[in-house]
Length: 164
Image 1 (cartoon, rainbow, N blue to C red):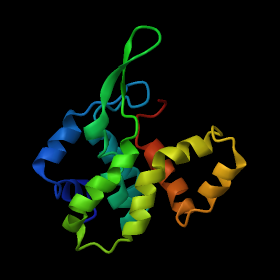
Image 2 (tube, rainbow, N blue to C red):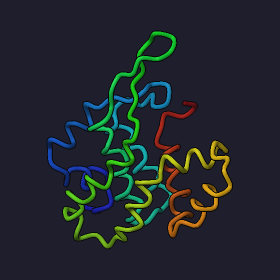
Image 3 (spheres, rainbow, N blue to C red):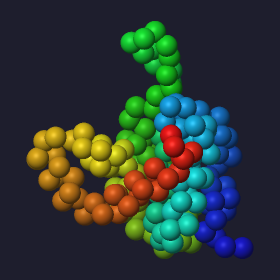
């Protein structure tokens, strides 16, 4: 069996984590695919289909694990509630530090994976032009794995139901 398939890599995580991914819903406005688990699988498959290396595949597994801890309903200005996971990318390191040893048989660059996971949301802001300050743009562009972060943002975007 090819070790680079989603089932093999996701099921290395403890059952409690996988179950939490399946039970953690996302805002349907941005993630019509539903749970974090579904999105993670779609991101992984987008990277795999593109021929991405093992760093991107492992990053796909870990990039949204922080949503388990911070997803909640937030009251909106119009009086409705929306599902949010503010700061989830900042929690990736916790999961990487705790579970990366489960992937020891795969040659990976842990620093690259840390940076991709940590900055994957920032890359969307960068690409849509939301970051205005030149100093912030320059700092982001000077990151050692800038090009990899930008490439991963494509997988993250493609890991959604088309048209959403």
